[in-house]
Length: 63
Image (tube, rainbow, N blue to C red; front, side, top):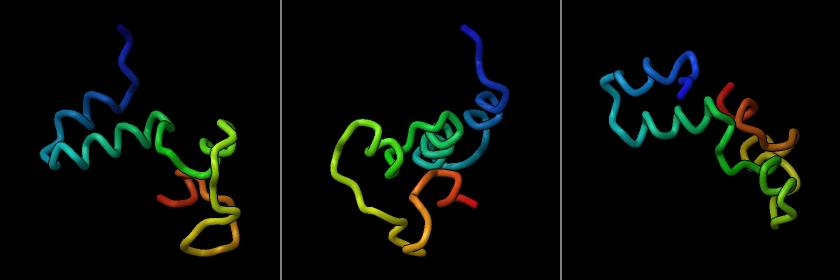
């Protein structure tokens, strides 16, 4: 099995497991944001709940 570049660093960090899991999901683009909900035709908000201007995506939320 081929690991992604940052997976080893994520799992060996001293952060709590819940934080490691979230960062791993974000790195693999697996967080349930509006763009993923829209692709699966599930109900979703029309814009980011924080800025109400852009579409909610993991890159937008984290950066």
